[in-house]
Image 1 (cartoon, rainbow, N blue to C red):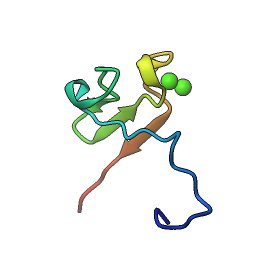
Image 2: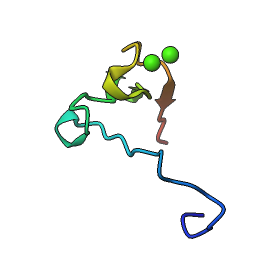
Image 3: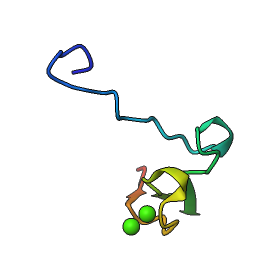
Length: 60
Ligand SMILES: [Ca+2]
Ligand SMILES: [Ca+2]
């Protein structure tokens, strides 16, 4: 996918859970409980609602 010349990735930015490695220095993931993780998807923190993606992991 990344090597497909039809895809323009120039506007995409990778966001990480640790703010110190993000260009906006904002944490883009927070943990709501031991297995529930919430993400903020907009640079500069967006609306800081941390509900843009919520993932729950259950291991059995
Ligand atoms: Ca948001
Ligand atoms: Ca939202």
